Image (spheres, one colour):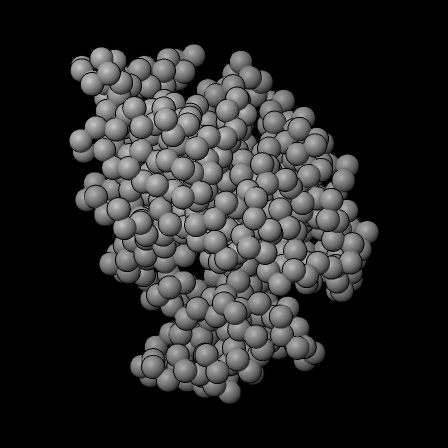
Length: 569
């Protein structure tokens, strides 16, 4: 109740702060700074789903309606933007991204789009040629499923192009990496090195490490890479923020991190170097998550731009690298079911404490066993700490990815009030290998967007960049088409799980706002809400599906400020 009163008071104050005492027509109206007319406006507000004009004043939306009504707000210094039929939407939110990782992807060897092992090795060789003797070569973004044959690269492959420099190259999903012999030697990894908990050192037929490290095993090598400098970390964040804004994202829900990163965000906000909204999570269980539980959340700092109230847990690996924890063995590798990466005895007490102090929890779970394990642990915590004993009665806990869910578990999300936070681009990439990993029958619970929605859930949509490209229009297209970018769909891929365009709009606007406890503040185009807007070059709610991928962001507005624009006026 107290939070609601604060929000209402802020809205009233905002409205009164932008009221002109005298207008030519004799009426008192808020002072308009931006007037958008002739647009295809989709509000994500069921009470007024469409409009043709929007007016903003200060950091708020002050009018939604027709052109004639909008023109009444125009005064001398008002900027009028004729959209000429372009789509104006609530500011898009990426509900699952790794912001610094996006920036570092631009700074390091970016292996996205490699079409073959030979292409991959050629790019590595070129980067090694630029490196100093003994200098680490790092990169990310390869996916072997698009190669022929679709096999992981090995240390022998890397040794041919990088015999001296230590090399570590992450698979696009971040849950696997290939290293060369120089890196293994520096890390002291040999045939006798045991697998760490939550990870795997892959071996060849002779029992020797073949260069592939899964999940926690990557840390055995990564801890030998020189620390990132503060300057590089700052540069990565600024690069990530700049890219996101240019694509139309107005908020990123940053899935994981630590307090040093939080302090860097604070510094950059204070210096006015970043304007993107960031809803930040801290990795746990860890010292950082223990600090968040002790210190409490940071909510709405820097004019609602920064919030820290969430702990991110990783419960399993990824499907592509076979680290996702499954209920039954992998169809294409029957000797493994994947593995959990969190210990129940550490997870459970953290959950109950989070409920008591009002901290949200979001847990990465990809395999059907990991999803069931997480739902079970959440349910136990909810029973142990009833609503009356919680700091926040509606905790809005999340499961990130929710990619493979046993059909029996789908209704449990809505029943427990757990939010499945999903990334549509995973489905259109994974369709090329998920059938072989799982077998056709288990695809019934794979990327089950429509089933989850029909069971009563909402689905905040994200990109998981830099695992994926991180582009809003790719995600929107993937959600409504459920086909890859060339129009391909596979056998047993359940086209009925695609969402409608109205649902897709909500996946990137009002539903992420709800998942961030901000649905009364932003996420839809309504009078009194924060003026976050995304404008695309075409009406993505109507054009043919393939045309969605050809559209582009032409303006991004955050807090009523134009932070990116391709408009001349």
